[in-house]
Image (cartoon, rainbow, N blue to C red; front, top):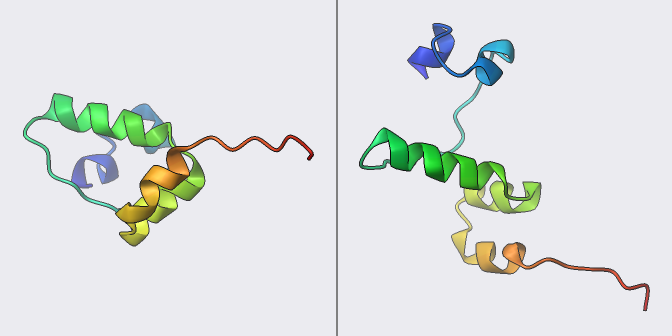
Length: 71
């Protein structure tokens, strides 16, 4: 967070300052942390919000794509 606040973070975050940390998960190295971050960025909003709320048990159901076939 300090790096982002000092303008040393990613360009995306630097342009959108004031960020708020809502979820933290330690990883063994920066490469692994980056991979997890990219995976979470690809998730739906509902799935990310469940993660933030600590409702990991909802994640598998939120991973399934739902198609409305108009039936």
